[in-house]
Figure 1 (cartoon, rainbow, N blue to C red):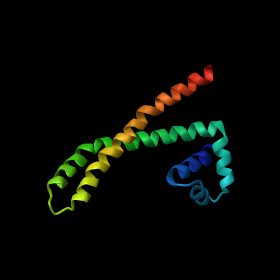
Figure 2: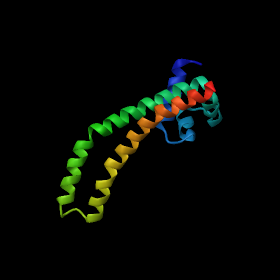
Figure 3: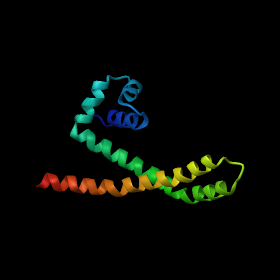
Figure 4: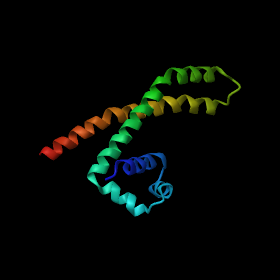
Length: 120
């Protein structure tokens, strides 16, 4: 498997929300992408790239939690902002940040369980 081509495919898969759109971007058939996703070596590289992206995103969100919290506190006391908007904003940023943090914590555990399962 060519590394440069593999990197382009992985990048496209991570950049587009569907296989169809990723295939269109790469100017290749969807079935070709599905075949790549069946390849164990490719899946390892793809999963590492997804995990890395998730780590980076989580780090970014975590680094902005203080700023988001300050904004939320300011919004709560700003009577010009509709109450429902203030409430929704108050929930959104911490909720997503915590979900991503949970995923980061869970992924290594799942990988470890998968390794143990292969050993048995």
